[in-house]
Length: 240
Image (cartoon, rainbow, N blue to C red):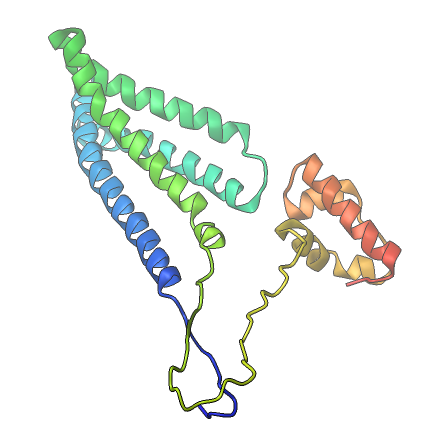
């Protein structure tokens, strides 16, 4: 630093790194707790369902595999719903129905295991299944929301460090300002549509709703939104 310039050095505040570290700690500790609870609940729930299946005529490999079909149905349905949520597309009704069916089946099997000990026994036996389903859905919720936290973390506040040397004559100060870059106003669907139908736009043709639904795998409202956006590109004379 020179006396003539009398610069002000800006030191970045540790606020942002601390917030990022806190968010990461919360996210990973919660994920670890959910995984631990889900693992214990899955083992107990499987044992309950296995004994129920054996009690009603199945044995050997079949008795060991049938409980896995219930948990596998819950997993597959939840993953389909997660995929739809991350792509911004409507969740298939079949996935919702199968998820509900899988939850009902695993709860019923666990409750049947403890039914011989009365209502309280049935509730105690059904609890691992409820804990398993709840833990798994919490984990899926965290995965859906992952990546959105950084958007709400405030920017660091710079702390100026002033030169206190009395022999320096005050002069003009220079403060560096960080101007945030404007984000792309288009959503993911519009970007995907522009890329997917680049050839059609190049010849001045707007794809139909049916074509958009088929190639982008979206519902009617999202397809209409994409077609309106592509039509606006042609109207502005900006084909991809």
